[in-house]
Amino acid sequence: MALQDTTHLTRLRARLDERAAVLRAEVEALRAEESEAPTGDVEDAGEQGEERTRRAVRTVEQDRDTRELLDIGAALARLDDGSYGECVDCGVDIPLARLDVQPAAARCIECQERFEASHPPLSPAPLPGTERPR
Image (cartoon, rainbow, N blue to C red; front, top):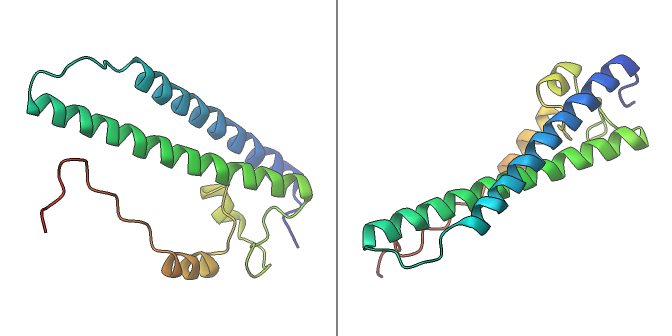
């Protein structure tokens, strides 16, 4: 049975909405920063390396924020369809303490641990120009 306490649901929805607004602003700022980045000639290899690093960090930050926005969108959809608070894998209720800490949580702890074990995070790609010769 999904979470039914309307007071908690309202509070958790507000937290999800607030976090989504923050993330959307961050993604927009990263896009603006990217579009405003100088495209002129870089003076030396050190500056080129710094620019590649800045670009890579912006990309990783934008990807992270976008993934979190997707998770929040899915949580809001579960709130709308009445399944919020129910593990998407096994169907058991997700403890309220977990939802308080991670309002976008889709899985109970046990299923989340199994998911993470079977879906290890991707290793970041090396920055351009830093690959080791084979």
